Length: 224
Image (tube, rainbow, N blue to C red; front, side, top):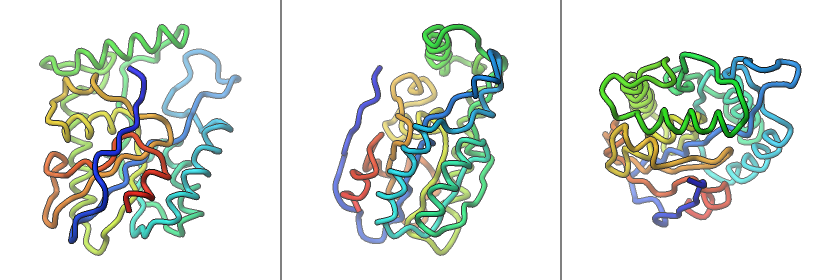
């Protein structure tokens, strides 16, 4: 399914805290890494860096108090670009890291996409693992616990969180009332922004209100 942009509501409710969930920019292994390279090590491409620079310009207009990032290189690089523009030091959160496969996929981009798509389709099955690696249930739990730790931090009202498409799929699926099987129902474009509004005391993903799904930095600004 092609990635789609949805603006779901306007304006934060009074007293809420807002999470800006950011997918990192476009990333790919360097050509010299060859087939079978560790996808977790892939840096941002030139286009990916350009995407994030544009996103940083938009998010600089927001009143952000906190910047949290996965520890995977492409997320760290994205967070560093954002940090330079918005003036916040990123905080690392391993719970936001990529969904870990059991094997590195080889073949054409279409073959890889089909294998990943099939894995997501099976995510709701008991004991399902991502390409033989991390169990989907354990992945969903660690993402939710990571966001709960962020929500439990005092002293902020707006936080930017840099993570990966599987984590965003999980959060968006939960906010739409779907379980792990919902991972196949949503996508997140590179350098996209999804927005959750959380009431005081909320630490659960499914208790949040989804304001923007898979949007742009400009759309995030218009919702502020």
